[in-house]
Image (cartoon, rainbow, N blue to C red; front, side):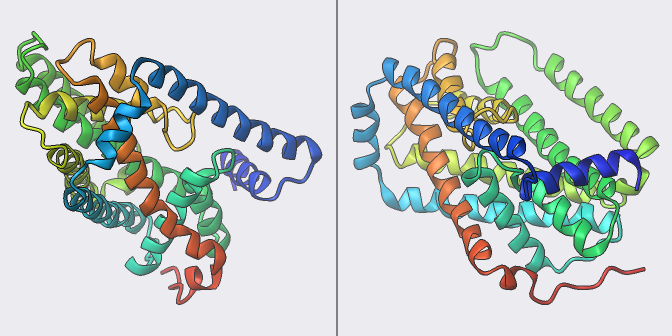
Length: 313
């Protein structure tokens, strides 16, 4: 293995099985810090928007539309796991769709419920390297391109939403030109330096658009469940911007960050403050419910690894 691969594997193994007191203390410290950041952010949010008002919206929500939002999000996760599988196929990692989905759910669980640990991506790198002896760097870049495809899809939808919001006083040609130029550079760099990962590049990016579209639909369903009849676009754009903000892993599953971003954006876009807090909080709960499915494979690891296919030579 190269030095980079050694570092990736060593870091993941150290976080899965801390070997020293110092490492164990650091894991506990990271968890406490993330919980503290989440608590502080939510404190300031609910200082501006009474929690009772948000609670009222939850109690009086149309739960059929909430169920539709949950189903839409779950389908997006199924397709998202398929998107990752496209990049795995690029490195000749022929996993079954069923096993890949199980691993994806387990990764979601780690991301949400183990805030101080390795996270879902780190565990995937560890398990696939350990099982298939595949270079950690290869798995790392497959997962990285999976993430990048999601960011690209978010950028695509954001450009469309900018056109629908009159408060953003810029010509559509500007963000569209930036997006097209960025997409061209993105593909050129991928093809030039990571050609192996472009084998299913367009297939994966179409899936990424579907994933983001379904998650945006989840937000629409939550809004409709609040008997909402105003413009959807400010809320949808705020959701996407808040999703970008959660890339920085400073809170528990992004909790507090989305609400903070939404609250700040109410000063820019015509949004109801209570709804702007209720919306990301509800989306977080839906995400958490789906992520909890992954706990089954923590309790029954044999079910996760059952029928693992062999790596093609």
